[in-house]
Image 1 (cartoon, one colour):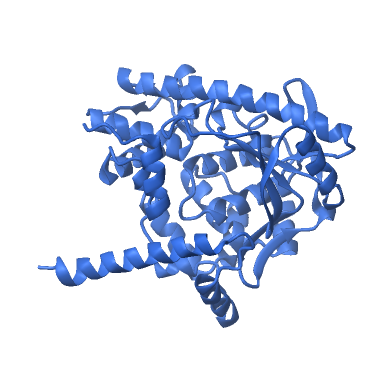
Image 2 (image 1 turned 135 degrees about the vertical axis):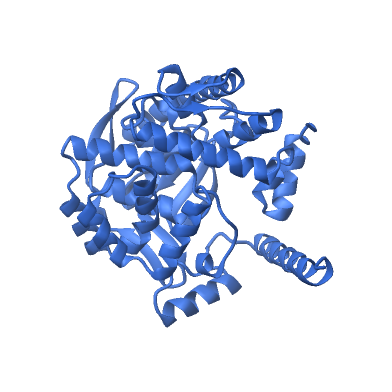
Length: 414
């Protein structure tokens, strides 16, 4: 099997094409799709609590390489390594070594991020800023077997809008540099000095990481369509990180925001995000902190039903019984036909993007006015950080795809 190009070459190819496969040219798409399906089957089996542990195998060197790539891309490599170490799955020797490697490196990275998190929380609170942990920064410490089994690229922190500038000043004082600031959603991104990608295949401890400082809970879709949660809904709960008490979102806002974030990334979401939803829902229903009527009322109040539908429906399909039956039926009625078709295609493809489609392009649209807003967005994005250079790359990629389609239809056709 050929050796892959350097990390820099692979990143440059991805920058030119926008094709994820450019990051892993040493394995075929077919092998990656097969590995993804194997990981979905394995995950579904573990979540079903089988009497006998399921087994993960690789029949060739390419299969093993593809499994390593997809363990990283899907995010479940460290979790599968933990399952193996605790007897919840079995694996061939080569696969066992691969999963153990994913877990060991992710454990080192989790220690790096935990130290940084505790330091930042201390600095912000000394500056009079209350901090709430978001997404994986929260769930890794409560809902997963151990923090390294929920890898992340960033620390996601929420502060009140009026405290945002004080928080930014505290980060600058700690040596962080703001790399960009957006208004939709209202957040900024911070890094600590120059960083270089060390690996595209595992959660390397020295891979880049940053801080996402949020001053709102919202998602932007296209012109005229966005979802937000007003500060009066920001109910929090206490959790422990490294022996320190910190805050995270309370239910039902936690599962709503997780589902909103995960659904926004359809159809390129990571399998780990669905596992996260299953674990969060199961634990919260079990301890009584999440009630289905409370969740339904929050979705109705914030009009977020259709926007959380893809993630919650896919989580239910991955682990049947995760959702209450009546709640699922109500949620399904709030989804558009396009959304339901996108979910069907994604599930049939093994939670791996089956390629672009008209349904995927317009899946959030409801009615002619929203259709016009989506079309306008495709011509000129309303993202407030889109530069002319970035927009040029978008149009260049679209042009290359159009040319490739024309060649396929009219030149290579028999």
